[in-house]
Image 1 (cartoon, rainbow, N blue to C red):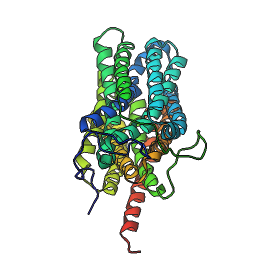
Image 2 (cartoon, rainbow, N blue to C red):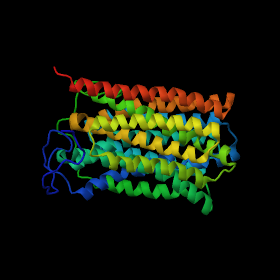
Image 3 (cartoon, rainbow, N blue to C red):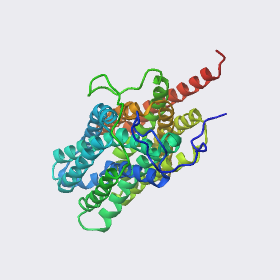
Image 4 (tube, rainbow, N blue to C red):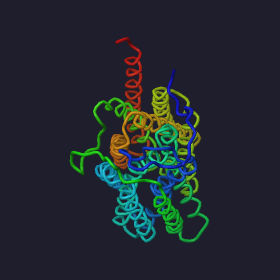
Length: 421
């Protein structure tokens, strides 16, 4: 019988046992409390992409190339990966709140810097701070959702944590696009609104029923490349194989999508750029609810197929100058990331003990975000040198190869699982 994300759960009473050996062990919390635990992840991810539609304004006012734009984006990835080297281990040893609260403060500082930015250096610092906060959200934040949900709801916790991430990632650019076109202060207003959202997230973290680990994971350096316990390497590898190409595809749309849209439509509409990012991540959110009953490896296989189709469609869009095809590519990219992310998180949630879960989440995201940072930056500079069409084509060809390899890895693991010992 295939594993599902909606397995029946026993009755719950909302209380949390004390003196547990692992974070989150004990009775399941009310479902509303689990949704509330996912809110800080959403709030941080709203900031993660809120700047996307605004880069055209900063490019006009400050003056920088597409290559420089992808470097600004790369500093976000640098901050995120640096955060992942620390936040997962610290969260598993000291608890979720000591990681989440400083991260939210740093996100508030990023809002202030974005709102007052007049140089490329300021944008780089703001993106770096944002990346650090996001690293804490995808490690400690997602683990906190699982802790609050309790052991009976690990599958629904993976779904909510994953959807919180992608919904926030899509909501940010939509808010930025709409607010920058309709209200004064086009590069200021969205960050004022986001600061309010982050303050509500601070209160949500303070109210989380989380205890410090009674038996935290021990051994090893505090700063290290995150990993998983012995015996969980296959689950991590399967998740990265599909999640990495998926998030690389969506990262490309975020970093150079507005430029593509501008060249195809001859307009710099920030609402259009924000809306494209929003529908991409709306697809990532909705597809996860649609496939949650499927076997995890089936979800991963579908994610690899979706990313492959997305990249092929992207190549077609830039060669035919077709906006509908570009939007179709964005939707398929969102679906690919969503399924890769859900499948990877679910595999880890089902097998990794709570005392190592934040580090495992960090390991999955390091594996995904490294190519998501390197490939779009390379495509940006290549586009400056040979043109956007040729740069996007080369990028697409490389990503198709990675997505196909990811799908084959999942299929091979499925065959190995069905072969007799």
